[in-house]
Length: 76
Image (cartoon, rainbow, N blue to C red; front, side, top):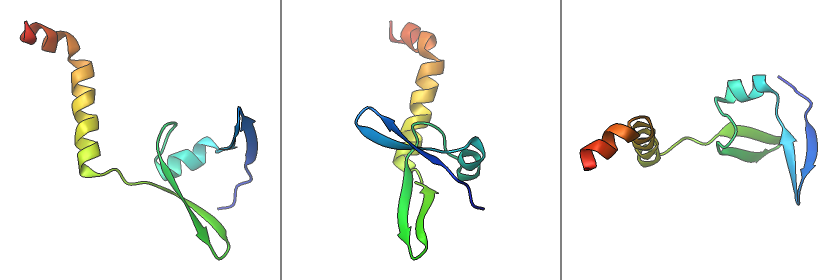
């Protein structure tokens, strides 16, 4: 798959605008980390796998956010 993308100036940074279909194929969204690797043909873009610790912390934060009122009552 070859997709043309635009470079855009945002403040002091230059960013790459990725189409939604590319984000879906990589299984990433805004705020996720991606890895940019140099290849003989140019560059490759891939998803950074989440460590087990980071995954567990994210899950715990999700539960705490969804159950905030119950956790507050339990803490009283």
